[in-house]
Length: 248
Image (tube, rainbow, N blue to C red):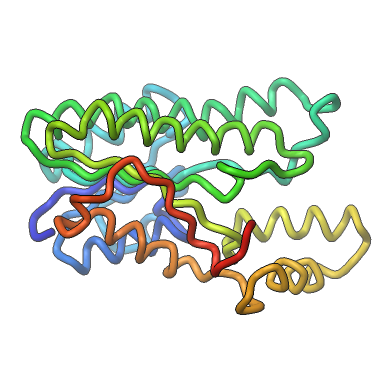
């Protein structure tokens, strides 16, 4: 991975931050991207602030990475919006649907479109998308999130077919519950709805896994980092669940 150039989105915190740091520790030159300047500055890597829910923001992130670091070899698409604000499908605000698709699916497509062609020309590339266990299973009151995360897996598999002949791999990672700020917001929303303590929500989430705990961001990031290596060249078009042996 020495001197590979990586672009990692959602890199200011959680899984993205850990993935960016792991890639950098392995020798990659990493550009961290999110919408939060302060969080990105604290990561300690090259960074650019961009709204990856827009085509212009995606283009900015790619252009700045190439200008400062060089052609992109590793694309980790980790940014996203959760489902804490969603409702039952017949009560769902169409704007929530559109915003979720804009961030969770349109952004990944734009980033892919702007980078994978160059990877194919150079004969090497690694693309890793963060989906979710909701990418294969549906959650209640989460039509937009569930649909978008199913879509991310489809995108990963389509890119694997298009780019695979040129030495580029494309895979999705499907985390279960991880103690991130996004998951914390959903826990708080659920706790308020049910009138129970937030800690109870997290205990219940932990109880669905054989180890009776939720994931740490680093555990998911380790899988992402492996998929970016030369050693992972035989893994392509896969949806890899990282959920402690649980079914959700």
